[in-house]
Length: 456
Ligand code: PLP
Image (cartoon, rainbow, N blue to C red; front, side, top):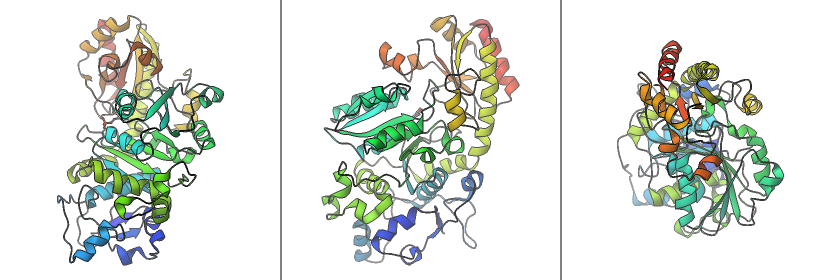
């Protein structure tokens, strides 16, 4: 079986080790041709079966791998050779998905994790430690907010939450000498604002800091944040990438573009005692960030994706472009319908002509803004509850980005732990309803919305 490398990932991986021909070191890999379009990468990147091998990426349901000698295993542990030796650190099925997602985002490498939360956690812990500080947009997923404001704070990492639409001068005030990263979401959950990625990248880079973008709702089908200067992209693959509500997962993708050698990130440029003094930037060049996330943090924290889980995610990825197209088209129709309804107070969907984020959406998400809409009813929270409880086909779920249309009331669920002020900063009112438009026929979606609105 051959696992296909993305255009650049393994070149960067091994060049610093002085190894020219990848085949010499890792016969399973070959360089994937550049230039394929997203639809084709979704089907072909990451895995290319050889003569007589399974057409579908096989599930390598094995925690471990056999080697001929202790010396060979020692070289793997010293990161001198590449290869699979323990599924927590790498597995052929998971690897195929990582290569596919790296190719889709245009990165040098990716690391799958057990959930989106694990991806956000590792992505930041790979950069920041106790005593460090991070600037984050305040309009982010409630779980990410808790991770930052509660759990990472307990580990000594401080966060300043900013209004992503504030002026540059206002945003500048959030930066400190110990700031180590900037974080935001391409499309914010649930408020559905659009991050001005280029502006945030410029601000971050002015301070020689990386911009980390959670691009879960956009997926690489709708936006590729690296093209606008983002350095690291995170996804909850639980959402559109899987898309069928089958499998938890997350992924971190490294653009390979950030310079970690400025002196602000000694963990990248000084010897790692846990690998006999290996220096990541020297040994792995452009892939330093993603290799460190895997060999140091995944090794120690263990929040890995399973082979079976990766198989499901791969299934989802194969049809992602088709699904995103329909999600967007259905959501545009549903957003227009809601906007015109007499019981609806406000609708936030960035493709609506009068939406405050329309210009940003035109720039960053020209093909659509996903299936997620946030809206509120004139009757406030009580009307929202009546509306949700009256839906028939559309279900109430703690989920979003599913093929089936679903709704959620963020203030009483995903964002329940936030104070009123934090809710306001996240763009949520007590009456906000998050609608995740699925792939049913639009007539059926609108009919269910209409009859539930009658009851609201
Ligand atoms: N990021 C965003 C934008 C999300 O919507 C979510 C979950 O809803 C997460 C991260 C966390 O992902 P997971 O639920 O896979 O841990």
